[in-house]
Length: 81
Image 1 (cartoon, rainbow, N blue to C red):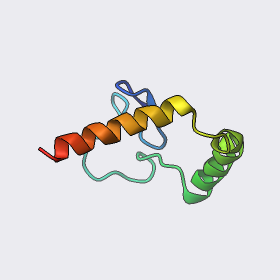
Image 2: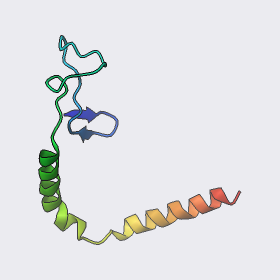
Image 3: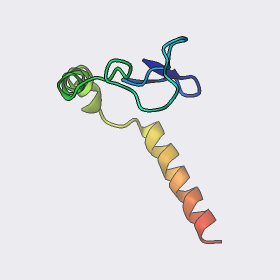
């Protein structure tokens, strides 16, 4: 699992090559290019949806709505110039 240090986002299936692995960025065999197959990706997606479904059903906080409205207003002002 690779972590994007700027955002803290985890990228599943994207791993940095290990020292001495012989991975030079060229074509890689299945053994040296670890990836999650579709079934595992699907299961992870199902698990995440189950864990966060309650969160997704909650209303958007008024503060977020206000911020989005400000951004829209700013965007319209910049585009009208």
